[in-house]
Image (cartoon, rainbow over all chains, first blue to last red; front, side, top):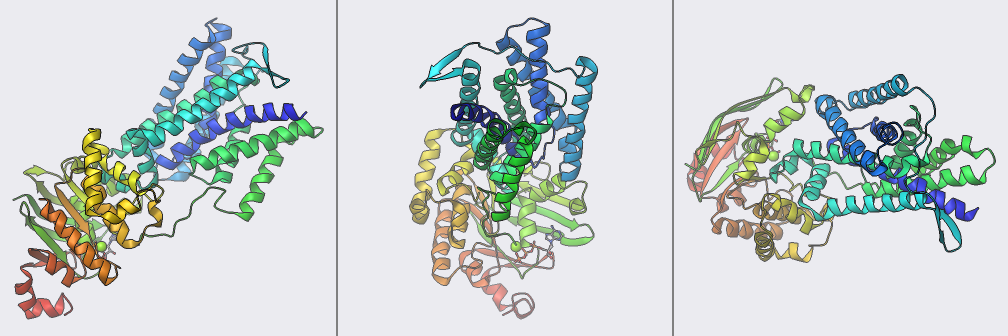
Amino acid sequence: MLERILVNGLVTSGTYAVLAVGFSLIFGVAKIFNMAHTALYMITAFLIFVGTNQLGFPYALSAVVSVGATIGFGLICYALLFDRVKVHQTAVMIISLAVAMLGQEILLLTLSGHYRGIAPFVTGSIDILGVAVLYQHLFTVLGCLATLFGLWALLTKTNLGKAIRAVAQDSETANLMGINVSRVCLITMGISAGLAAVAAVVAAPLEPLHPGMWMLPLTMILAAVVLGGLGSIKGSVFGAIILGFAETIVVTAVPGGSFLRGAVSLAAMVLVLIARPEGLFGVVFEEERL
Amino acid sequence: MYLEVNGITVLYDRAMVLNDVSFHVDKGELVSLVGPNGAGKSTLLRALAGLIRWEKDTLKGTTLGKITLEGSVLFGGEEMMRLPSHDIAKRGLILCPERGRPFREMTVLENLEAGAYLVKDKGVVKETIDRVYGLFPVLDKRRGQVSGTLSGGERTMLSIARALMSQARFLLIDEPSVGLAPLVKEDLFSRINQVHGMGITILLSEQDIGFAFDLATRNYVMSRGKVIAEGRADDLLADELIRKTYLGL
Ligand SMILES: Nc1ncnc2c1ncn2[C@@H]1O[C@H](COP(=O)(O)OP(=O)(O)OP(=O)(O)O)[C@@H](O)[C@H]1O
Ligand SMILES: [Mg+2]
């Protein structure tokens, strides 16, 4: 059972981590609290399903096209909706929630509410230290790791990454460095949507697809992001790992645990927040502005 | 004239913060802008850097975004009021904001690199970093430190250094000496002089009249959103009315 927990825990937390950092990124940079973030994940998953199962395209091709389409959709939502009401954060939340529900309804109408599945990208398993690990699981975990590493490299090593971090920390002052803040926000939205899409590419074959599949991951990444400290990318990753494993342990080790998967993890979040309201990695500097 | 400001007026909702302000700065000058709290010095510098326009645009649709902004700012003959703030920075007119405003979760070095955002040549960036470290050795010592933990004086120096990284030609420095101990002030004084000596034109706002008048070649006195006097330190200090009413001496 321990090895099950380890493997499934890594798969779940890896997926949550990639989703959570994407959410965190666009919130930190453009202050967009994007309730449609996991709906983007769902859209990619369904597009891959249509590509592989209905049109007969190979997985890789379907994945690339779906990621591109999802990024495009995310950018359109940003430019047409979120960006225009950005000053009113509650409006952003409500509008993005509406986008998610609209996505759900459209999927229901076009593909019906049946549970669907995508065939694994790779079949078979590999023996790691005496444990049989599905190639698909390995693909998911390595894919998530590579994505997180790529994001880290982008944010810390490139000029664009430095601009993104500058805007996140102080958008007004970023202007003074010659950074085009609205362009950086738009690019960040593209990256954020791309991260949600990539999470689907690596993890969708493991999940039954249905038009309500955005809700549980949304709850979980919101919890992960708050747990880690709103706005902290590192915190989001750790929050996702903690909640991913908590969920896996409950589902695997507790009888009837799959009904409790959300509840226990959320309880974990509440406990941490009572002890440390700013989250695990939330930084509070003394306020210097007057 | 290098910088020519004509009739800048700023209203936050109905509150007039700048009332038809005009002045100019020539190439190579170090000019000070003095005046009491709330005179409008920061607002004026922010307007020159395009931040009032930015504020107006980003806060559009809220009560805070009800800003009126009028007037003309010619920099090197080009109208700045039509440009977004990041393009104004591109022209080499850079604001060092009040209290430095470092990117707090970045290290000192990362702040300098962010300042060099516009500079594409890696060699130039490295060279400029060495140059600003030479100018502000304390930043060299703290290069790996997260800037949110810097002292007030270090923040101010970092903001000047960061502005220099983007190859600034004209610095707008907002209240560099505020809250600094006398020794730190003196040190900063000579650093600003050095920056000026590098051929960079400077307009700085100050509440500390001693600091400003010793440093600057020419001064403007502001009060309640207006420029009410201009001149060399001696002349302003000799004017009884200005001394008493506006400079509090
Ligand atoms: N965003 C704003 N909304 C409303 N009023 C503002 C705003 N910003 C500044 N003001 C007002 O404008 C006036 C001038 O402010 P400003 O910060 O430019 O003064 P200052 O000369 O820099 O003062 P200090 O020396 O205290 O920094 C003040 O009365 C201030 O209350
Ligand atoms: Mg001020």
